[in-house]
Length: 482
Image 1: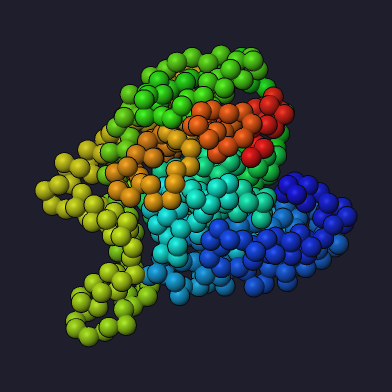
Image 2: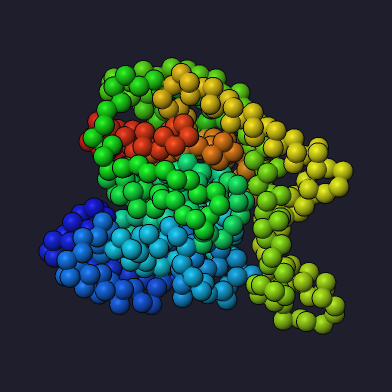
């Protein structure tokens, strides 16, 4: 049942939060895709409290809605591993702001979901606790790094979930599993209570299966928070734009994103989306975004130095798991703790970031990447003077086979269409729009899900909700039937 339907029925006392949460917990326990790292032992007790609040006369926007959280989001009393051995024993003493807003609205956390370690990955294979499997095809990746959150929605265990997006970590798994995933404008959702990967790029966002649920989630989590210095003081009624029209809109199709690196199915999905948009009265024009080609290099030269700095705290001394071998001096214990606790991809990115920040290389790499970031943001601003939104693929292909991209470079190239959004702080959404059939061609009826991506100007997150809802109505929600 959709989140909006559950909340309506629970608020009307035609259904109970307790039953909704019990059903979700049963689904989580039966799951065989390695989606959950831990379940909430107090979920049923918390659901009973929601029922009591409703009976006392409270109206709760998410009354009784079971939700799943990426395991880098803190909840008091629950583990927060970030998918890493170095935090496998950590239990959070506090609840993050975005999560607290969901709880206040009547949602119930059923568990914490698997992820690429510290959010570093595009496939869901980098978790210290094993790869997440794609519910659409367990031989394929679900995308990353918010792999478990996307899979929990795609598998029908929960109607909505939260993830984080640093360079595509919500949009990629949404595309690979066939659900909606949105990264809001940087600063629209508080990062208080998020285990950081790259602080200037990380943003919390929702997964959903329809636009109404997406709007409710955004309405709940987008709010100013004085505990986050980057939090913006903005307010938008996302539910009010669900009935909006895109007639007269100009949509820019990014030429640089339509090259030979895309599969035939992805090109087919974009062409299908373009035709649908034009049928709805929007004009789709080809535009050039040259900075897309520089996005990956700039992203990895900004994200990895920030990761190197953020992850320095996990030293086995003041914070995080310590090596059982405590012989030697403090430096040896710290080195062993970090060596045992971090996985290969996290070590790679820490080393890359430390190198980029080191004496003699700062100006050549990190400083130059920051200048490129400013140029990318300026280029987006210029393009948005003439278009209302941008259209491009979410990923160059449908979900690939587990283990198919063993080398780091080929995995990084999966992010080619998503990272520039984070560099510019823009809102973006991935919508399922058709499938890849067994021959690799585009299909409108069955196969592996294909995602198309829309990008909006800063703070124009509502446009993406309108786009989602309009396309949902126009296709009779066919692109959501996966």
